[in-house]
Length: 216
Image 1 (cartoon, helix red, strand yellow):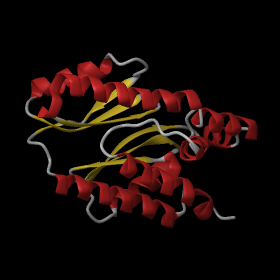
Image 2 (cartoon, helix red, strand yellow):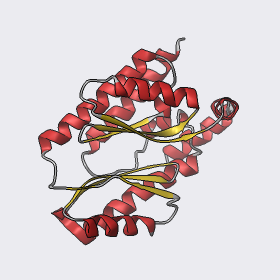
Image 3 (cartoon, helix red, strand yellow):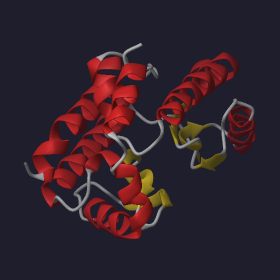
Image 4 (spheres, helix red, strand yellow):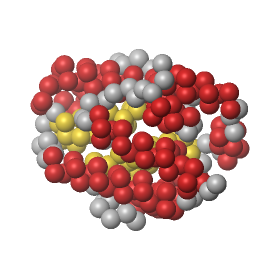
């Protein structure tokens, strides 16, 4: 069985879940969550912590600013990427402060733009670009696509994940050469090839535990 085939189904699920759940963060449950967690390099507790960070951050920002801002929160290994648009620098700083106060947050990368809210058309285009990048990850067949999370905002592709230098470079090259991408920003955490092998070779029982956690 080739790598391309083995990782196509989890990637398809990863692509479809955000589309099906709309703009609001949701903790995935059932078979889909189990598949995604098993193929993820993060420990199950970190995976769930990231989900919690996204939900709490989104709720707190919505309570404070409502429809005045458009902010996306993406947490990977407890590093939070903030993207979107806000009306002024004060609001941008306040949002970062709010997210900093959320439990389990380790670091914040604040890429929020001070600008008018993007149109639905622009957001749809960003989603399409993300899908193209993920599809090209599969075609390139140089690493597991599930190890790199892609967030596209205003044509800028942000790449997150626990990856080796080789995987990071390959992911950047694919994203950089994808039509519609204006810029690529690395938000990835580098690990050694040996660390990657150890993580990817975790015992089957560990994978089983992660699946059970996702199906609770």
